[in-house]
Length: 331
Image 1 (cartoon, rainbow, N blue to C red):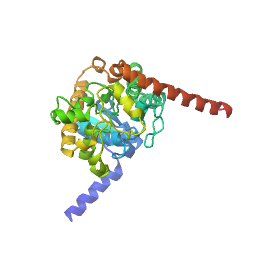
Image 2: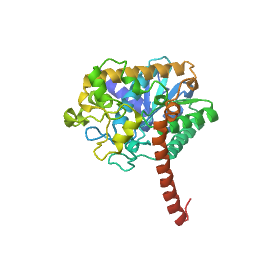
Image 3: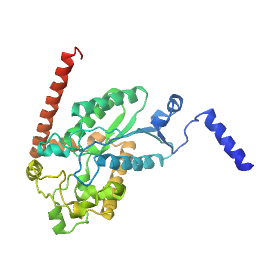
Image 4: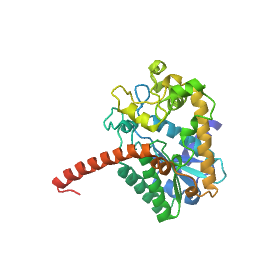
């Protein structure tokens, strides 16, 4: 009888409605109504916007690999925030939009598994979200949308700059700040010298990223990676040459070296980095004093050359769409 009464009382509380949030809560905006959102203390609520580009990851990994990693990182960051007294997190659904698939390194704009949008479209999406959040009084927003394209990160950085300038708050592209996940390798001691040489510049769907997927979502990884040939490069120029080739399968490095144990080490290190950076920003660190990945990458001649190709492709798409709209009398 006591249990029945307790359950009935709980049901009454649920029916009556949402109360002022207690400390340490993570809420999902998709599950909340207007009144519940209005009751949030906007000055002590952090909005997290997880993202995940749909991008080919070769024959072994799913196209949403970045998204699965970003969702897991978002949960880690949220847990760290609400562990602080008085803070609440408002988690958004994952936004499956991004730009600059790794296939564009080889100037292959059409590649099964990659469904990117233009960088200007990505920026507009996040500026629109920034406007809605800012107008509703939110002042702390973190974007967790890890992806290696400099143009992708630049678009998110610019949306964050807009939020700061217009609303006086912080909308930070966390993965766009150093250190990037490229710090997953040396001096991180998980490969021998011979394996390091075989893996090379492991920037996409190689040992590092595949190991993390084996740790987080092993059921989505094809076992054929264990006998995969390496695509090893030591420079951006070599990466471009490899990606241009007809035999390139969509990944770099040596997937056969991947293990879930390595993935655990790499992932936990990155998670700790991101949490540390998040809490420092909440404590007053000005994110503008931290180096931006996009700025540094676009200063590299090889990266800039690839980005120029992506910009040209984006402009071609814009013109095609604009011409169709013009013919229909639309704007």
